Image 1 (tube, rainbow, N blue to C red):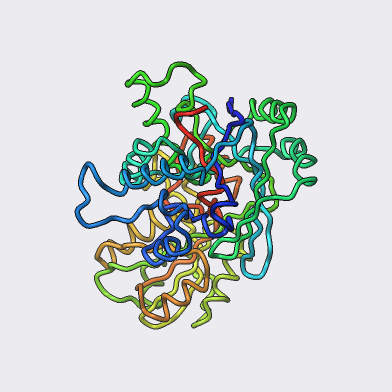
Image 2 (cartoon, rainbow, N blue to C red):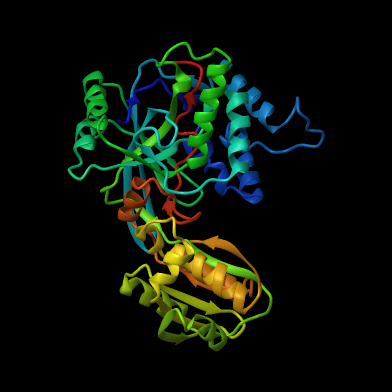
Length: 435
């Protein structure tokens, strides 16, 4: 059962920092050096100074980016730049965004969610994690004692019963608003009505939660809890380290969008043309269409087909695009014998297991390396600049895939899903020390 709590979040004093738009930041994993500098320059109180602090010359084990983040946060709290709310509550968080000309609104609520190791309760991961990001986040947790950015969780709620409790309480009050660097409008309301909070907690109790984004942060929270228990700093089951900050969104929310994650492939032993790629694929794929230099037509074919087994490939050497459909599921069964049929049917699974790890390695040579992008315009730009050898357009996984595969206790291949937009850091912080 999902065990959630209202909490007393830490939020910016806008009378001190000015506009909320100037102090919020994306999570660490989508911030490059240029954006980091832009955010640093936007305000001396921008959340990037906590979430992804700059390295400096002379950093060592005692003085480093993690200790700087901790010192900065401590100074902000002492100066009331960041204040803890006086009442426990849930934080309704809404994001309005536009993708390829269409506007969506996604909404959920931020709460504390009890941590439990994967496989021991009703919180399910859906993607594999890597050790590097977890070690980075653990150092930050140790130094600051805070969840700075939320985990993104999904729960089944076909009747929207959870949000129906919150809806009347937020529409009568103006939200706090922040617009991020991508033009996404972020709105936040605080709900402290104890009856409503209790009802939401009760409704959430029987529901499973599937991690959409923030797997590294969640697993880091579990590790941090273990460390604090060993240190004797977790006096009971209600102590703050038992929980993590999580955004919870109903899986039927109309604004919940999963973008595809396309692959830009390099590292092959030689360049490859479309006829050569067809020769590589022919034993396992049917060629459905050749769209010449029109990547838009290739992508539209993939979208209209709707099958996970249908992929599009652009060969940079000759600028040609083909659409191909996988037709030998028995090969996937042989290559991934320990995975379920649902896992083996995913487009990203087929691409990696069959095309990248098997066919291209054996018939072209080299070691395929992927760069990941989400928009067709990014693919077009990369191929025009010849930044890869093959561009692979992959259909997005669906909420059904997430629920089925995670519910089986399996994890999708890395970069199987991209829930856009990212949740901002700085809308509300959660202390891992104070209740």
